Each structure stands twice: as structure tokens, then as C-alpha cells.
Image (cartoon, rainbow over all chains, first blue to last red; front, side):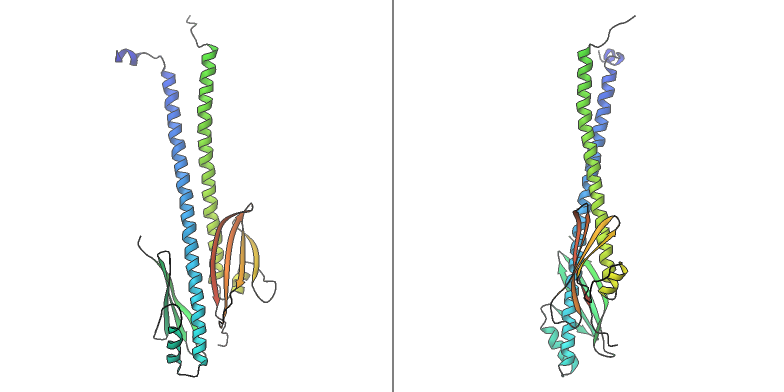
Length: 139
Length: 135
């Protein structure tokens, strides 16, 4: 019976057409899946970029606050280091003052940005960023 | 001679069935193509926006950054809105000065990439220009 069915050529073209259509459907679905993955990846990269630059902006704002603190300490008339330590304590984020360098970190969405500003004391206190890098936390 | 064949109705039905299936398939491929184009546009817009932000962030001052992008502030203050064409996108850079008692100037930056009036990417950041030039 099976032998007879296989030997017969009736309906062979239909089988070929159906197979061809099936292959085309598989290709179509694969193309759509790949395209959707690309779109999702694009949106994810977009989100990462957005949060990266938001964090950079936050760090720049902290830099401005520290610069203002340094300026106030220099104008206070007290010994500079002591005055700077007091000024830095009043900021609403944590800073570390060590070896003429101020270190701070900002956080957002599981990412932290580490910044070190060197204090250039040659003419008047001036801040120069020496370290500026982001650390992605494991998720 | 064998004169057996298909009737007209049979041929018409097969063509109609194949047409419907092919139309669905064509739609699937077109949708995949459009989605791909959209994904590529979003990624390219991101690159345009990020490279603009890096140019501004890497410059000594915001004025220098704007100048290297070929943008000239209208007055003394760089605050304002600027438009430039980058990688086929219209990049809109909005600069505003943030208030605060800082020795330098703190600018907030908003950088958008548009194409055919559609916003494809946006970055918001800030740049601090340390104002001491006495050395």
C-alpha cells in the first residue's frame, strides 16, 4: 500500500508547493523574529545610553557643588584643608578627601560613576578630573 | 493522448488559495523589513546623539564643543537651541544654564535626534565649565 502510494506521482506538485510555502513561512517568521530582536536591542542600547549620560550629568552637578565648596573654603580665612573638610561634610553626597584629591560616586539604575578630582593648589585651588569611570553592577 | 486536466473552477480555487497565502507571506516579509529599518534608524540616531554629546563633553568649554560642531552661539552665553545635521539626522542641542552659586557655569544639555519630524533618540546630561582661568 505505502509502496504504491510512493510509486504514484499523483499530487507530487502539490506536495512540492506546500513544502515551498512552509519553507517561506519559516523564513518569514525567522526574519520577523530577528527584526524584532534588533528593535528590542536598539531600544535597550537607547536606555543604556540615556542612563549613562544622565549619570554623567549627575556627576557634573556634583563637580559644580564641590567646586563651590572649594571656593568657599579658600575664601573662609581658616586653614584651607580644615575649611574644605567642613564644607565637604555639608554636601548632600559623600566625598573623600585624601592626598589633595576628592573622590565621590554617583549612582543610578544599578550603575555607579566613580570620579576623582585632583586639587591643583599652585595658584588658587582648582579642580581637575583625574578619574572618571562607570561601573556596571552585576544583574 | 491523455486529455485529462483540471476544471476551470479547480484552477481558479488553487490560484486564489495560493494568492491568499502569498499575500500573508508578503506582509510578513514587509513587516520584518520595516521593523529592521526602524531598529537601524534608532541605533543610528543613538550614535548621532552620543557622538554629539561626547564632542560637547570632551571639549574644554561648552563654547569650544559647540564650535567644533560648527555651531556659533548667538550672544555671549551659549544657552539656546542649536540644530545640526549629523549622519542624516537633525540633531537638536538645547543648552540651558543651571542656577546655582558655582565658580564656573553648569549647563544642562538635551540632545535629540529627529528624522522626518519624529524623535528617535534623546540624551539628557550636564556639563560643568570650571570657571577659574587665573592660572
